[in-house]
Image (cartoon, rainbow, N blue to C red; front, side, top):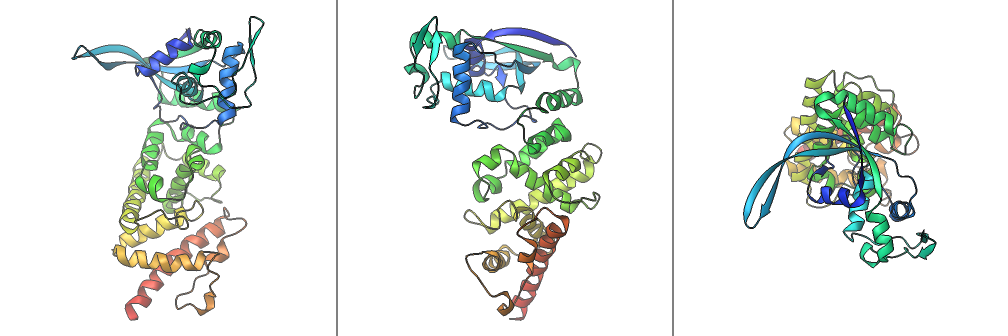
Length: 364
């Protein structure tokens, strides 16, 4: 593994990001928006004040960028750098230099050559010139790993080690465990319109990859070849370790999950805040897969969903014993929902209720 060490100033980082020479699309990286207002503001303060900043790690490879000058399109072969570690730092720095946000009101003053300057509430252009110069002129170390001298497995191991003591969630560490290629596949699955437009996942949940965890839980429960003890994040991470050695079967599961999500896109016409909450999301996908397999038309499935929602919605307070098609689904909710018995119970109860409802409708 060949590694080059450099020091660039903030202005150079920002220019390279704007020119697409620094890229943030490495599959095992976290999504944007991990830091709150004060966290990103303290980073800017630390840069201006001269406090130590951890180095950035890149994977370097030759690539082509396209530029336009005087109406002429040109191709330029350059060294592209994909961020392995340091994405939150660089995106927040570059966004600030582009006046993308103002510093938090709790940001401390900065002292430059004995003079005090205020930062709180200011965008980059509103800062005093001395502070702007201190920020853009500050150098940060970076390490660039030559992609021709390393393997995906080595990069995944390096990423895992660098973040093992950092505030990465277990969900995000799972990306390193499943490997680069699988992280890319799962990221693509996680971009499905059902997740972003119709599900009940919040922005913070998506930022911490909770939606990917729910998709992997769905696959795990459908798998049949993995004896899971529960559906906790730790167990799903263990399941992630099997991806590299079971590629064909896992790809079949990805396709099944995608088919279920495509089906639900036809069923739903607006955001589903109950059935597509994190706790119910895998069960709903698995039930939708059952509907696909049984060739249940979307209108019948929609009608079933409305019926089932009234049963599990705590606001409805329906007497289950009086229903034409009852279910014990709620017995498997509440405390300890990650327990396998409860997770499997929810899955079987939802699937069985769909079957019983369709039979009832047929006879009605």
